[in-house]
Image (cartoon, rainbow, N blue to C red):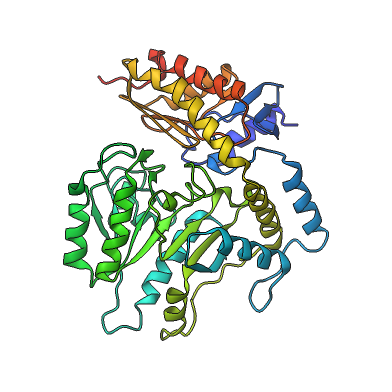
Length: 432
């Protein structure tokens, strides 16, 4: 149990994400998490709408995930992956190869989403390292987000993001405007024109195009048309450039397809996975590549791929990931996500009429309210807790990514809290 002294220590000494140490945002002490409910130290129960930053897709304290970890820890919790393999890693990689888009049959395991992106970018650069003209640049779309480590930050939006601070320190890559055609809007071919022009002009410098397929997550929660992704795949093939799909946020059913690439019926050359891979229980990521990518890297001057995290292939994480993927393979997520999408649409779309709301977007188990003005984080967080829900907005966006197992009444509690919030003046930073 956390005491007042514990919370004071936390506030004074523990650095939480995106928080000042001079005037830190309030932290709410969670003591248990079960299914879709967080319980605070004072007994307050909160319906969880974030899936722990989009990872706990099966909810919390899932008995099958717990059992998988208990079984594995009785044998070994960790062993180095250099020169050693183990059943949990083999089983996990077998499942990933079987379920991933066609052609992705080489699996590199790492320990976080950002590292999966770093691995993918290193793969792309090393792929060309033995060529007469090595390629070291990447092309991506604005309003994207790929993680907080340095290479990952370098392909996030350079102006309109949390990473603008690092401009001048990061490698400079190439950007085109984010797709303008919405997911369910009529396709506009001119949307791809800038991407086509950049590839035509710079393809000999480019190691890869990297993007989040269909859903741009932390860069703006935007949903774009599958034809854009389809045309990017065609252009990468035409100009001989690799395509990296960052499916860390979108993979494992979140958009209504197992992988967002499947909305466009394409396969990337390299794909990054994380978040829901372990059902939100442990940190683990995977970078998948085609045989062609793996073989050329292996024939490069280095003779192997030059990367090897200490906790690569952690048996405990691999074992629980196997069980998470087994739950997905049973197919219940398809009905669950469809029902979430329907309820989010019914309950959030009416908020378009609210003066404070600029747009409402729903796709799969993602619901987004875009407001005209940024939220006041401390105030709106306190408001949501007072309503018995856990929702973590950012900027002008209030969004939901609930666990797939959420009940209709729990989801309604979340949407009702948002409906009340967008009518409260004190929860938003108003212009001078």
